[in-house]
Amino acid sequence: MDIAIVGATGNVGRKTLEVLEKKELTVDNLYLVASSKSAGKKINFKGKDLEVFDLENFDFSKVKIAFFAAGGKISEKFAEKAAKNCFVIDNSSFYRMDSNVPLIVPQVNSNHLNNIKKNIIANPNCSTAQLVIALKPLHDEFIIKRIVVSTYQSVSGGGKAPMDELIEQTKSVLDGKKVESKNFTKQIAFNAIPHIDVFSDDGYTKEELKMTYETKKILGEKIDLTATCVRLPISVSHSESVNIQFEKSFTLEKVRDLLNSFEGCKVIDERTDGGYSTPLEAEGKNETFISRIREDKTINNGLNLWIVSDNLLRGAALNAVEIAETLIKNNFYGK
Image 1: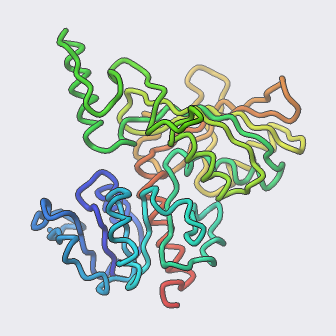
Image 2: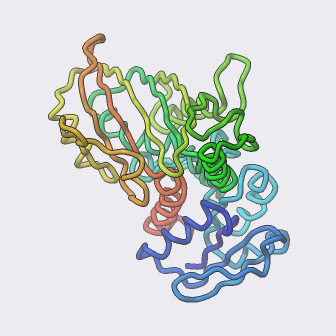
């Protein structure tokens, strides 16, 4: 299997490399692709230094699968050109709501891969990916009517520059210096910002609308979802407080059993001090962790969950590689 990573020098690109190193997926030839600024650099993969190629001149006929991890503008310009020669797995938001492009979390809706029309598969937003992997077994059993979700998202969701700025701002605050915000609308250090991405006319941010539309596309149009997305001064991992209303009644024991037995989920739910998962503990882990499982006694068939996952892994690199594994397992790439 010959594979390319577009955006190989960025956060998600490098994380994709890490995932590929740990996976059993056989990679015969790996091509690292980035902008002309990064062309010629060397990146180590399994003990070998691989040269970074210039995206403008790269020949995608060399590969079967190309991971795009360089943002929407790059995907808009290059993804369909690449897709004439190989499968494209796109981490950006550009193709997610395209009716001709399946939006995939393999454990949840791999059957949607039967609808590939452009040779492009979209990876959902990081906050959506971890949400639907926890919702899927519950929806299958109890049927979800409505979801209210509040997210607490790490700065890595915005890329490397926001991560660097969090460190710089934190140092400035501790040193008593003036803080300047470059990648955030307000100071992020020691703060919480209820604003991720641009505002729409109805007052919701694009991040919040992504969660609504993507969840519907993945799980079902009849699900109602409203979201509030908040950026926290955390380096890695997103957390979500989720309130769900089902059509059918449930027991907490059944909920825990369903979640624990579903691929990619892990329940950590002890009603004691520290008996729950936090962003720090989720960092570097493949699982989506579910804690604070309890009934919402103010509505019929209501449930509250706390969901935590490494956004760079589950929400991006790991999910993308698992899509590739699914394509290979089902021999899609040979069709």
